[in-house]
Image 1: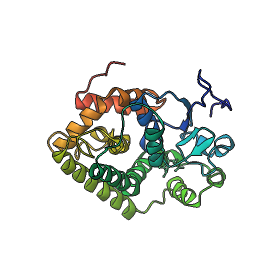
Image 2: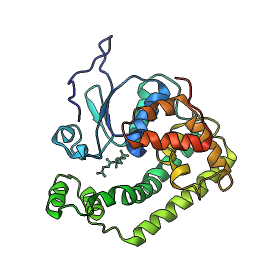
Image 3: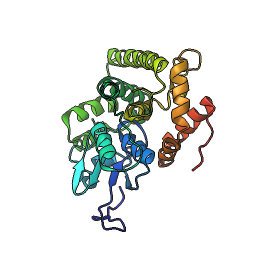
Image 4: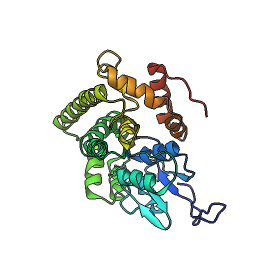
Amino acid sequence: MEASDADHRTATGETMLEVYTWEPNANSGKPLFCLKEKQVPFVFHYIDMGKREHFSPAFLAVNRDGTIPAVVHDGFVMTESTPIMEYIDDAFDGPALRPADPYWRWRMRQVMRFMDNQVAPSLAMLASNRLAAPQFQGADPAELKRELDKIPLPERRAAWEKLMFNKTPPADLDESARRVREAIRHFDALLAETPWLAGPDFSLADINVIATFYGLPTSQPEQVNAQATPHLWDWLRRCHARPGIQQAFQLGKGYIGQRAAEARRLLGVGEAAA
Ligand SMILES: N[C@@H](CCC(=O)N[C@@H](CS)C(=O)NCC(=O)O)C(=O)O
């Protein structure tokens, strides 16, 4: 984790917004997409999840739960990525990212709750078992136990223990896959009715979903493609073509940016002008 200047101030003396997070991916990416869409300047502290820097004493001093993102503004540390996005939309100038119409605003929140409660955790379980779990095979169990002891939240420790010791029940993986399949079908149906997930305009609901769905053309090509999910496919193209979304992906330092570039290639999306 980078050394943090205790006090970032803008030219006019206001406190600069600071974002502690990993790649533009899932929860950790949501504030990055939101800030780039609104063109709000911020200080980016890259927390390398691959090196488990989110459990380092330096980061635990910012968020003792050891989860990302954490956003610091005007002396407040904020966690929980979805409320953070609403805070950003309230606190800063730039295009509004929430519908004014009460029905569409309800829809935005409904989509985000469905994502946060069901879909994103399911995709995270599938991805971590596919990508992270194999890295622990052959590791020294005593060393892994020491790593587990650094994790503050018991539920996170239990999830990491399953990953490290390859103990995720197959039935849990099957249920996660079912939830993702159902969400893909549901969002394709919503997008048959309106161009964006919460009505006629791009909103936080779209950011919430693209933060997790951006790579589906590469990771789930048999489920997400122009024939099977035409409305979702077109939405993916329009999200990936947005300059703010592309700028957020440029903040990545690892493989997430490459995965997004591969998705853009499959979708036939070019690079947006900076
Ligand atoms: N509900 C929290 C969840 C945050 C969260 O789970 N973030 C992931 C990264 S996308 C994380 O910190 N994972 C750490 C871990 O599981 O050890 C939010 O929306 O901000």
